[in-house]
Length: 621
Image 1: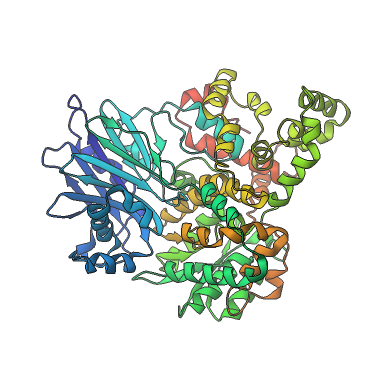
Image 2: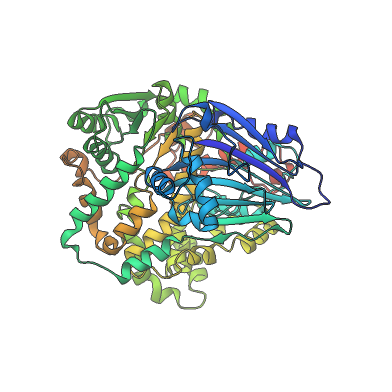
């Protein structure tokens, strides 16, 4: 796990990359890679690659990056882990390749030398990398199918730039900080910025599951090599009976966990009060992992309540006989950490606070790697959205088909039920959105709805942002090809949006801010392919039940039977406590606290941008 960056002046009219820019971009990512730093330059100084290293596999200096192979023809800078590296290495060596390290980085180089761009189809892992081919004078970029690892790019004046962080590209001081209306609108709609957009016009994310080539002709359009909806659609076509549901889940997740334990350093675990992390700790033990250290964050405001993760996590830890570390966090520590937390947040997000503190606990414990249960609800149908979205479509679809029904409903609600309209603003959008899959998902996950945006952002910016973002079309695109079943459709929507743009991105910035690699065995394309034929049977709790039964010893019954609540963070209490002498003493609801927290986050990330302030984007409370 690392930080990568590079500059390629592909046009003859562009100046050669500046070393100061390369190093400034690289070293602002020092937290991502505290174990070492490297740089590489082409002979003509037209291409430069940088790297910050967090040593996980092959800790020796020989595995440092950027790394070269094939007598210097290929050079790579790589962020991530390739979990099927041992099998790939064996295959390469049997075909005559000579490898001089035990790193997965060198395996990637030899795979590219042998298979070219098709090498991405052979990879199991989380990855974002760039490979320079000196013979063709071209750069090749790739990002894993789920988008676990970030990769941001910018094209300006005949020069192509890339890095693991948006803020790293900005640190090079060569790109505009002009805000992208699509990024602003996307954040206000979803609480995170939907890729490929970022908060800045000149910077884009290489989409998950895509590759991109840059050569003398410029930056070619990114090309997809993996689509989650396609995997789910293929599974629906070969749909299997649920008779062996538990056995198939057990085989798949055991294999994934075993693969994700590949490391030359200790691998710990994040342990909550839920099934996902509890089952993963049990599977780690089944895979032969010994002396497991598990970390739980417990918030002082939740002590003695059902939202306190500590007691149930302790029961899981006791069942699996692991060393359990409970890290207590209170409002004072949150306030003390807030400036650093916001500084580390690469793009605005309303989540990630819990990950910040559990990653901080991991660093304090001396851990570099930790297993997380992120992705379990998306894969095993754990969210209420798996029931809500189909139900809303059936219930409201006939009414929403009536022209103008949504506008009329909003007017009636404001007139007849102003309290409901004020306290449950999403109710105003039910007939506008709940009839289709994309609209229902926007209604379910939306922070604000489109009709509310003009209260937050200048009208012209809303108009341009909605045009560029086109949220309903973008959501619909993630359902192509059709996953074939209601469970598959919601799985695709949750995985391609909430998981990708918020949970995984938050895990990256919050973990790497503390030099901790967060591994997610339930976010694995090989596992998805294996389980896709039975995913339609995961409805009504069957998926989570099967996951709970995957370890040889299931998590405690209290954990398995606990109602789904999500990982709670007392932002509501902290924000209530920070309002000082406000005349409004009414406690903030969960939805209100998320909305208010979004103002705080966006204000911190755009405080030096007057255009955002003029647009009214940051409303000071």
